[in-house]
Image 1: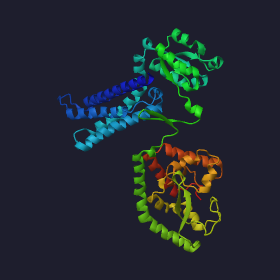
Image 2: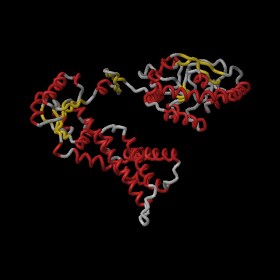
Image 3: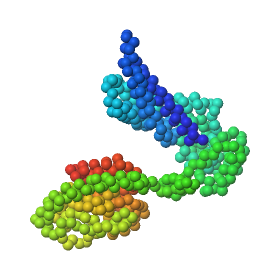
Length: 468
């Protein structure tokens, strides 16, 4: 089927690129290192090892399966550049690692620089030429398969660009079978006939692939079509439109013999990721609590004494992971006995004393939350914990609002580094924050964690306008 053709084409391209990287190494070796006047092949065995390591680097990058035919056959500059950059990274990494282990001083460093530069250009060009070159000679006119689309035209339209790519994989779309003939013609499709004529049309056009444009359980005929394709020896490809019908993006996973759909990926459910995140939390929060909090507490206590006598810390009940409540700790930035507590701080808020405004702008008031992080109630990075009243209020107009509570709340988060902080004046303000929180939940990785921490650190020196 198509996925096997994509996989095979991808592997052939990788094999050719491995060969290209080794051949290029040999050519440069002969041109730069070999002394043909004396016949001296300096360090041949050692250079041969480096050539194999270069090929190994291409192999490692190529071991990642092609994401799609569009990805493999895409000739866009940015796509080619990204793939080539990854390959050169692995090549350089493999060679550098070997150099580090062996402490080899025999190989020419200028040679390596020349090779890395040259192999980048060769691999970059190969991404443009090789997939098309191989596909044209593998899936030529003698081996082309004829495909027909059956089902709703609106889904066939979504497949238009994708279908054009499949011609390079040996599939020729001859038309559609649909009850929506007028609409199909307006969209540029050749209408072959109606649903009732399916069996005759499959035989007449010598079809080897049927692409069903909707899931079978949404139509009685489509369930019958599966049996028809089996009896005629025709391949069947089913386009999944379940996401459109449910109105949600879905993720697929298997557990043993059972198959499931879920609404989202959650990388932090992976115990390794969870331990990495918790380790990072402890590694940062412990030094802060031991060496920074004592000094900032003294500074804040002096500010309180001068401008607003009262407790050092402000403790408030907040909604944490899965809406379990906890007591958040912050340096107090408002005068004592302020009401109501649930009211959001606003620009020029009279409840905030002057030094408190400075602390809020520079996020100094957030530092005691490292105690919450150390105790496991919070994380350094995560959705900001809101008041119980605010959670109830915001969830009324955002049905996915509580999804953000599937991870621990954080001192900072993706929403905050994007500037979505301070008072939420409109529904859009909350929508942006929740969207960023869910994006963090679905796409978590360690590099994202570090980038958010770094972005927050920069905001200490360049606070956004909404920091008040």
